[in-house]
Image 1 (tube, helix red, strand yellow):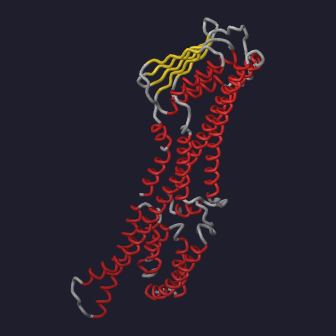
Image 2 (spheres, rainbow, N blue to C red):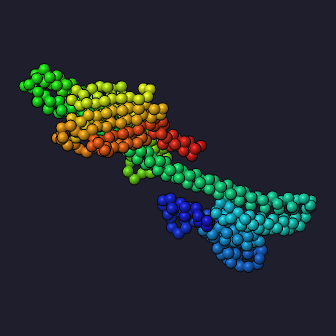
Image 3 (tube, rainbow, N blue to C red):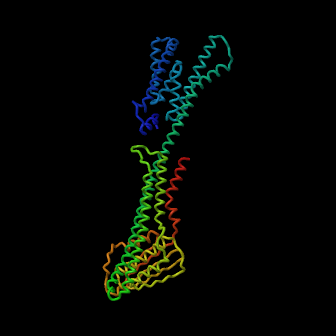
Length: 477
């Protein structure tokens, strides 16, 4: 870096650039004022030098003005100013010029080797001139202070003129570098936290999308299954209304029960949606609006990033259904299909046990949607439901035969999302899903769902927030 590296860095950070090489106008005013004071001092000392050198006083004054005025370029060419100080040392002029020049040289980005050499040359020159002048004064005064007086006075004068400004300049240089490194470190941390905040916001948006998809699947399963059974019972009710009033009454009661169950589940899901929307709108109203075109403070970025990451974790945790169907309700589910006239065989293998709520609900929904598809696309066909409890997973198989009525479809509307929704449910939990026709002309749906607890998912969702906190603590330490 050049001697003007500090000025260039300041200008790059957006500081108002002054004329020529000055970064600010007050720096220019300071240098001009120092140059005027140095020129006046050197002009006065030039008169004494002209008398000793036996040259016209005007020439000595002009030389002093020129030499002292060079202080105005101390920030641009500090080495040149110190060389001029060394050159005019025999003339015994430029006290202010020497002190300010050495300080500027030590505080600039000039390599320390050059600073040490020039400071040593300036100190040596001052030492020699002081020693010569002191001996001359002793000879004129006619007194003998001893051999120790001349070296002591000369060394003291040389160190007093050289060491303080050099040490002060080195201190200012080190402090300036420290401030620059801290500023760069803070800027880097701010960029890093901004990236983490963006990543956390993306995770939060992803979690919200997953939540919307999950709710859409739930509503599809509830509406499609219940309404399909209601349509089947309504058709049966229409067929036997006049022939068998008792059976028609029983079917009507079943239709009413299914309608009430569908409404109850829809109300539960809508209640969850309202509570989530209220929490999000409340959180958004409390957030202050950020002023435009202002640099975001580092602490604000850290808080925003941590809040966004926590929001992502909360959204992911909220995706865990709090109250949903369980595997123990499969008997009731199969009973509803049997009541609709379908022959359903339910077999359970292995030792029954409790799984994570999402695992049990997914297995239940797979069976529910598979039976719904049988009602829609294979009316009159028999179905077989197999549930296998294993050590760390649960397997579900729903298989139906060909329709006994010879109809390819019951005429119920279908959006084509049933199999897609089942595959998404199982894949979200890391399981496997296979569906397709059988050789006998029926259809088979098979799913294997691993048993994973919600604690692991909550831990992975909270990972960005913990990462942000660790980075903030490490960077601010």
